[in-house]
Length: 90
Image 1 (tube, helix red, strand yellow):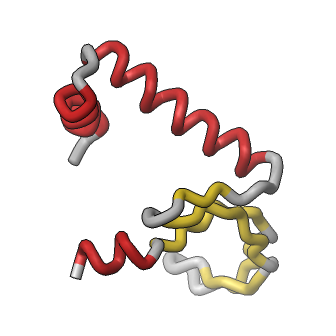
Image 2: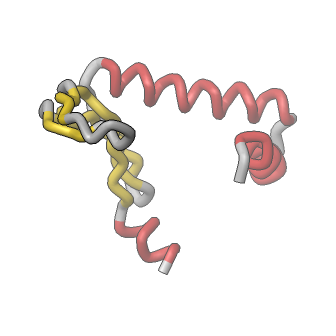
């Protein structure tokens, strides 16, 4: 499903215009990004939890040359599905 298709579903399900549904979705996604940037967790009960995890630096290999390289440490977003979402997909 694309973002446009999701906006259509939100608009029809909530009785909103597509413009309002688009603004709502953008606002939700932006709020999640801001919270993650601050290092906070975002928990949507029944859906899942968004969090940020720190990945250590590690050794890797350049596939073209085979040369060993160091991959720097990074903070990455993580999503853990909630029980209700897992059960819905099964």
